[in-house]
Image 1 (cartoon, rainbow, N blue to C red):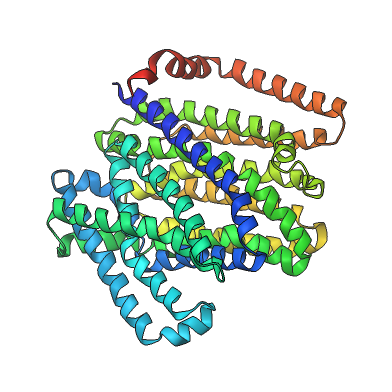
Image 2: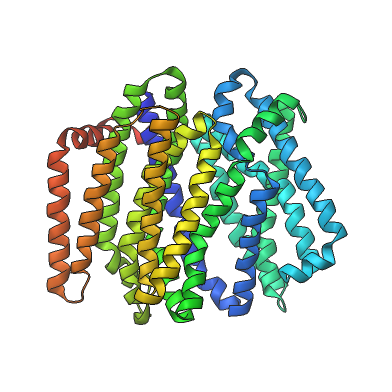
Amino acid sequence: MSEKNLVLKSGIWYTVSSIAIRAVAIITSPIYTAMLTTGDYGRANTFNSYIEVFNIITCLCIVYSVGRAKIDFKEKFDEYMSAMQGLSSSFAFCVLILVTVFREQISGIIKYEVPLVMALFAYLVIYPSVQYMQEKCRFEYKYRENIAISVITCIGTVVLSITLMYLFNDKRYIGKILGTILPTFLMGIAFYINILKKGKVFYKREYWEYALRIGLPMIPHALALVVLAQIDRIMIKNLCSDADAGLYIYGYSISTLLAIFTNAIGQAWLPWLNDQLASGNREKIKELQKKLVLLGCFLSLGFITVAPEALMILAPRARDYWIAKWVIPPVALGTLAQYFYTNYVNIELFFKRTPIIAAASVMAAIANTIMNAAMIPRYGYVAAAYTTLVSYLLLMLFHYIAVTYVIKEKVYANAYMFIAMGVSMAAGIAMCLFYGDGTGTIIKRYSVAGVTLTLFAIINRKDVMLLAGYLKKRLNLTKI
């Protein structure tokens, strides 16, 4: 199988699995809301937020080193993975001991029972092994195994959560929490043993120093991304109302469905990109990346076109939520900008310039907070969607400057990417003119979208034809 076909084929299957997993989440959501009070639902989901934040610190973000290590330690990759796991689990275990000493105080701070506090930090010792195994599979092009891990975890979480919620009838949020962490914890134990057995190295100074040089600067980056994702809703709640925050969160969650596709493309693209960078095949990268830019634009504009109807289908009886459609275009365009700037982040990771990534993310989070403070009181919750878009555009510009003028690498067709972003923004925001109610407006919206996408396709007809050829003729899906 050719390299390009492998990228496209794995991208398609990453997308299919992501859609399937998201579909399971949508289907099971009414079950959870029926079984949990709003308070229990909030406690269970807040626990997941604590996992997300504390994991950034306890795992030291060394998972970001895997892609480059696959090249630098090609013959000793299993050794590296084993030692990297030893590093993060040792640090997380030290944190667990510290938490054990101050468990009562920490329980009071995060407002969870002591056993759940202990379960949280014990989980963080093992959980990264699942991430490491998935990253290992990803960079070894083992997409079937990677997808299998996600699917098994998803199914196991649903089955165990529902079962345990019945068993913990008085405190069902505990059942939901345990049902979420136990399948991953058990899988993590198996992967921990597997990685250690294959690599046979727990500590090696060279590997630990290598992982920390790449990982530690990514901690502020990861925390800044959490702030960037969460600060809008907090500020809307404080500056506007709970109702406005609810509308924004709903519209934002619909918008991020686009990320299913862009993230799947990124998962398939990155291992191939690293291999080509190591081989010096810049022209190959530029050729395929232009097609992926085009694909991202088509997906984004198509998503913005159908978003109002999709929102109504997903909430057929909750008409009050339909007004959240105004959040969707800017957030979807922000997702496209994120998809684009990740191309530059991948170059920075390859050249181990992670402090640049951290600096950019922190500055974007600060800029987003300042813009929210200025715009939300004046223009309401929809303004937060546009400040999010501007923040991602700033990240795109910053990373472009860093790669081009600091690292001095010219890997991509930069002008093509920025022009594509500009055209997509103009078309996407213009689409808001046709977001009104009424059959006539809907027809106009789809007509404008059709004309825009057709013109886009004509201008880029060579790339469109090549992309269509890869998808239609060269992907032999029956042999997967």
